[in-house]
Image 1: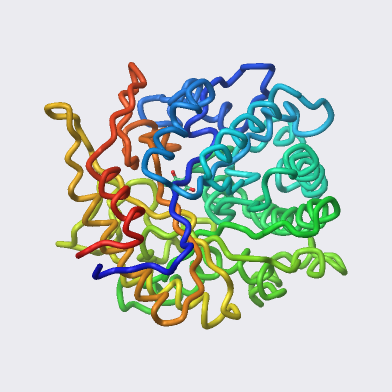
Image 2: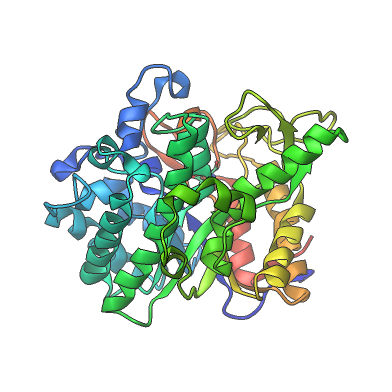
Length: 448
Ligand code: NOJ
């Protein structure tokens, strides 16, 4: 094999609850901020929503079979907070716990390791009504939710991530309002960042109070920031954006300190002892990476700097191959990011918790020939192997994603899956990339 991975490397896929589960009111499930946002006219492309999504709630056995058939060894999924606690706290729904319990049993029966994420953006609406993440109490309430998850399921899971991409849901949810809950307010944003960091630390403490041998960490979206021109404004903006996008969670969680400029901004929210709470011992870093970000100065943006988001084109860039999200294909940035974690964050254990691409795939003669996705994976996996050869301690890779699903503000238009989904019939059809991935798993590598 040209590209070979270490023994015991974990291979799998990642998903998230709101994007696939559907069954949005089943068994008294409570509303999350994404239910509210998606039902607000004009917020989501084509006014799509995740009410049914791909109905994974009812089809999870069939779906797990599709993982087992190609011998995946890991499945990263998230728990919907409001399926267990409709209001985020208080009343517990046993049937909600039962759903995840059955899902976990099914995975274990197929030798697939469950990698659990506690929070993939679906904050209970009731908590949002009390201030959401800008309310310091939410951190403690989150830690109580984490405790319940481990109390109920901790006999069969040991790998848990507290948050998925905290920079994305705070920047896009609370600074520019592009995502749920659609707020654009600087104070709300920065206080929330601090409270999410606290929630990370408090929940690690509460989970470890039940089981001290859990593998715990956070999943962060990280990637190099590049000024979109050589103008001083854009160069400065790139530094600012790097702080918000890459450091305001990673540094306190993994280094025990905030970037200096950010610390000044949150001064009024910071209490003695907070950093000790945030900076718990972590067992790994979960890295989500899709591309680097070309940053421009933008005085109208709350952060004064921004990268392209949604499916905007990268700023100031011509003649480069883009995916259908208008994302750049830049595997060298993936390599760079992994090596930065190794070199500047104390050589951590790294799980590559998300990476993938979207293309407008179609079924033709019963087949989905997504050769561009296969090319993408080959390039990005070669970058991973290069990082491993250079000493990075990478333990596993979960591709984003198994199925075409609800892509947040872009609705069902963007297809990221290894398996095609017909959103009317919900029929699943493996794409050629699924068969490619099956060979990668079988050979623990591939030929270029
Ligand atoms: C990262 C997010 O975690 C996931 O929910 C999203 O669908 C993918 N990126 C693709 O945008």
